[in-house]
Image (cartoon, rainbow, N blue to C red; front, side, top):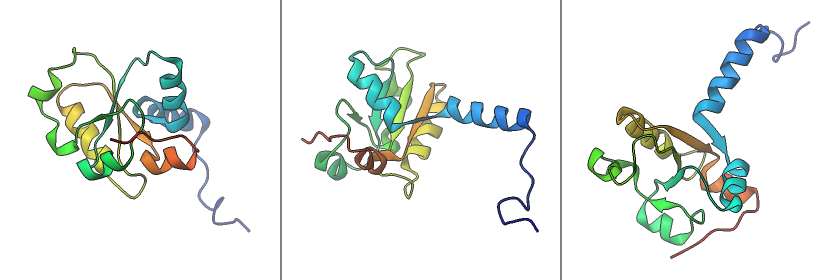
Amino acid sequence: MPTPVSETPAAPADQALAHFEHRRAVETDCWDVHASLEAGSPDFVLLDVRSPTLYAAGHVPGAIHLPHGKITERRMAAWPEGTLFVVYCAGPHCNGACKAAIRLARLGRPVKEMIGGIEGWKDEGFTLASD
């Protein structure tokens, strides 16, 4: 008798590969962001898209504060076309990073979401900066 896990068959390997490769194209995680920042010359701009109060209370070191509702073509003109943006919000219970990613993609900007957000960052034991 199948369990709740196996009652729906797994996707064929080629479909699973396509799915997970796609996820890697639109997501990154806290470890990869941390390693990139620690290396000293990240090839992306990290955006904290939470409220000013939450940003001031603690954010990923090196993150630029830009609430998702303030992402506009005019503001993004500060960076060259083709600049990769990584966005994060509070965490899995928040969709601010998704909203920011949609805005950036609509502006034709490359974007990835840092899954886990600030809560994931803290869960991994990484330090926060504060203003």
